[in-house]
Length: 373
Image (cartoon, rainbow, N blue to C red):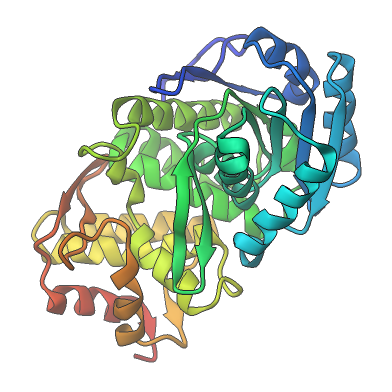
């Protein structure tokens, strides 16, 4: 069980990178202190707040007012930022707005929304005037525990997800737990998928906690919610600090379930499954591969399935065939020489990678989750 009692007055984590260190603030009401926190890390100029429409008007107003209280001249752009909008066309709209506002290198972008927003705004920050500061304000659980930390920014192409991007570390990340109260239940569950992933691959105590308190966590009930999020943030920050550019053996582990998950998103044109839902199915395929490779028992596969189902996450897929999914994995960024680097389980809270997984094993694991296949 998780035995973790940090001081809530301290950052959940500090991420250490070649582009500079930055703090991740996690608390209820954290948005009210965004301005002073930005001043503390030396951010000046104007603030260009780019927010998902789902945050408008109440939460956008809170962020806008908090920035202006700290003396930032603040301009806001509100966009519909679903997965289908995570592309070059949307980035161009932001570039054009920044050009109209005459945004300069001394100014700062503030991304407010889910993982699509943090990815897109981070990508724009990396490329506008060859790079301007960015502060991330994730408002979805998935973005809090994963997308907002680590500097991975990107847009999608029709052929695949996140193929055009850059590493752009934020100067500050602010998690306001109150924002989670506004999320639909389905989106909240999709966010828990990313935190469950971290537990499965890296922290068996956290895995035990999820299993013991699944219903309370799924309902955002009790103080354990903030503690689990802080622990997930700490895990992600530690991995990023050790392997900033995913060139070693650490950060790639965070892609557990993502190879098939990204393929599912691509073949369903980013409109059927939320990212965390696709990853949930992808984790079941990865667990099936792990079992067939002799790394784990059927018991752990069943344990993973049961936990995902308790969070109302999908563990099977209908209407897609194995050949289509396998073809979609060809653009996976972890591929080398045509071989995918699979992230696999080797026990509760333990993981590894392999490029030597036979096609027949992948197909067999896919058939486990394909309904009507």
